[in-house]
Image (cartoon, rainbow, N blue to C red):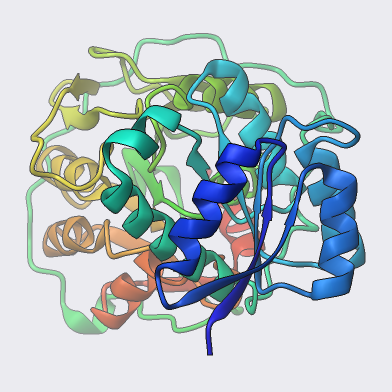
Length: 379
């Protein structure tokens, strides 16, 4: 049975092209269209589609307002279309915060030049977003984008990072390796500052909301540097870093080549590039290999962290499609590092963390609200 789709866009041309691409897949079927947010709500309540494609700039009612009301009245998986601009990034992030599952760039030129490639990408994304609608996502722990932390947001002063100490790599006896398979319970190993030189977090679909959930829990004096790898277009990461920085007590910035790793500072990998950990406590931001599917790629950053910091890394794999991060986690585990994975129940898409869990690489498997809380135990 085909997955049913509601197409929402004020452009008649775009509605027609989307409808043709979706119906031609054989796996999806458009059961209705709407030209503004108000119509989208009405059609959602009437038709009960499996998934919705939503434009953000429309007359009568905009896409973000429509998403909020749909998620309140008849929660339905939503794929947003956005422009590849700073403003488009800001609006897209607001849409994800409101409840949309994922997004795709709205590029008329690509529709004309590469219709087959775009159709395949659209169909795959819609099927994935539709399947995510069956998953319970814990959003109540995520502060709204307009909410500041309750305590003053004191950004840490820049400091000169200590150079990583040489670490002798020794085999870790299997009996000593923590192998939790569920939420943290009493008696789990305590965490301390001396265990780690770096926290590395990788994620994809569902990641913007998940990272907001985790990072807003951390205090301004969090004792470790953090690197963030989120699959995202190059025009989006700057706006995303600014958004996180405005909400968090720690400092969050888009990484630049040569930036130093500093306690209480999170460096977000720029979209379209690769971020690697270099000796001396710095990051390298490189163009990377075109053969790699993801830019940035979690495996690349995790692998470089394993080479430099060895067992002094705490890696976290959150919600996302595919298996990016699994190979990097293997490299980290060979060095004796610690790896966490988000659990299935709270993942928007249980792909990346599932790959880590199935490979038996996760020291701890945590529901999303517990990840930030567990990190705050490091002191």
